[in-house]
Length: 358
Image 1 (spheres, rainbow, N blue to C red):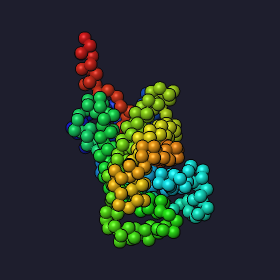
Image 2 (image 1 turned 90 degrees about the horizontal axis):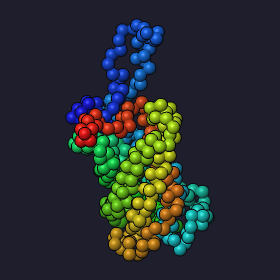
Image 3 (image 1 turned 60 degrees about the vertical axis):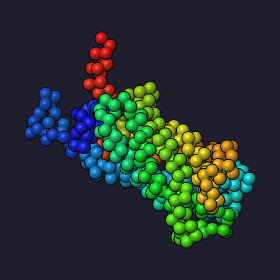
Image 4 (image 1 turned 60 degrees about the horizontal axis):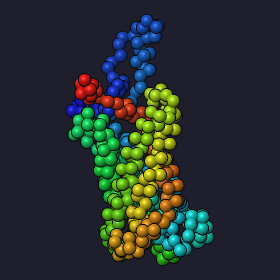
């Protein structure tokens, strides 16, 4: 298969792959030498709900992104809330434990979930674009660079595809992220605590700019985060199957593959948190301090201030990223979506390397 016909049956990494819809028609029923019928053999082949690389495939990947990001970010709202407050008011909240204690004292159990609604909406929209467009751009760029380069420069492919996807994902996220951070970081009693009241207030006071004023630092936070999230995850999965898992990926059960997915996701999440944390702190500060620019926020926070709340964010992002990949992969399994085999060297490249060694 060549990349030129990728739209017919996309396969980023050459290798055996069961065609969508079961492939060629099964032969007429009969018996093999082992006594197994041809029909039974055909029925044993995996059945997929759509073709790899089709519009339906990308749409279902987007659905997986909605569920993986929307559910996980909403579930960790209390941790995100305390993390944001630590970033913008370190003197008051001091550390994670005291932050939870003060937040509970000020608003009770409900106070720990301030901003859950914009979190759910914003990160569902982001997940749709992040995962759906990642699959789109990965196929698109693979088609552009060719089969051999897809294998040789696959890490660069992951980085480029994820950066492109996140650019659009942040545009979808920014309005609800602005509402969420204002709700979570404003002094108690000075700003509405619900989405239906907070969004109109921002629109009335600041117009559309109030929802997008932190888009640039959001790109600065999320694009490196997502590049690390996808590239590190993809390569960690490869490494785990090569060096840790005692049997080939094809021989692992679905549940075993999901365990590997979770482990690779957590490892990727730790690196994601470190890479993107300074920009995350600036986003939180800018949404609290109206009229401040990226430069103003950086100067006010200082270098050490931009690393405030890193510990809880590593816990949050590590767990989030692991759960997101777990849910996303689980959705693909549940929806019977096809997937390419693990990366392997194209035959044409192998022959070139052998010829060069002679």
